[in-house]
Structures are given as C-alpha cells and as structure tokens.
Length: 72
Image 1 (cartoon, rainbow, N blue to C red):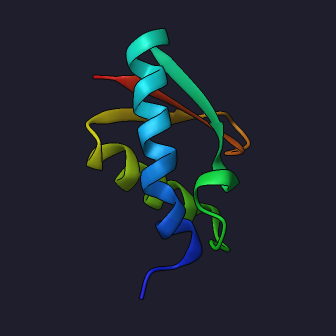
Image 2 (cartoon, rainbow, N blue to C red):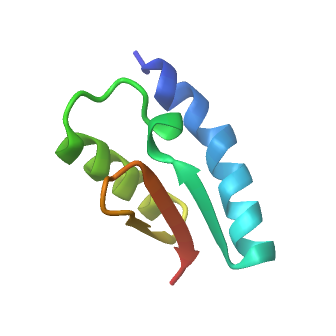
C-alpha cells in the first residue's frame, strides 16, 4: 500500500520536471514531497530516489528544508 506522500509524488514530480525544463531548476520544500518521514536521513534518501526516478539531480539547503532540482 502506498503512503499519502507516495500517492501525491507523481503529480508533484510532473510539475517539478516541467519547471526544471522551463526555468532550469525548481525549489521545493522537502516536507511537501515526503511528509511521513521522521528522520532527516530518510527524508534525504527518499528525495534522492524521487529525483533519480525522473532523471534529475537534487541538492539541499543546510537545514534540509529546501530541495533544489536541476537537470544533470
């Protein structure tokens, strides 16, 4: 069974990919992509997986609250 954030991810990823293609990057609050994660390590791991699944690279601000998606 998928979690709520996994069910929402495909639509969010489509919008992220679209913005990266038009603007060159997309900045998103991390907790808007993966809401059900307790640890920072798990949050980062899941967002890396999401980015990889659509062929994007991702980086984070120092606090791990924002993620920046870009093309490779």
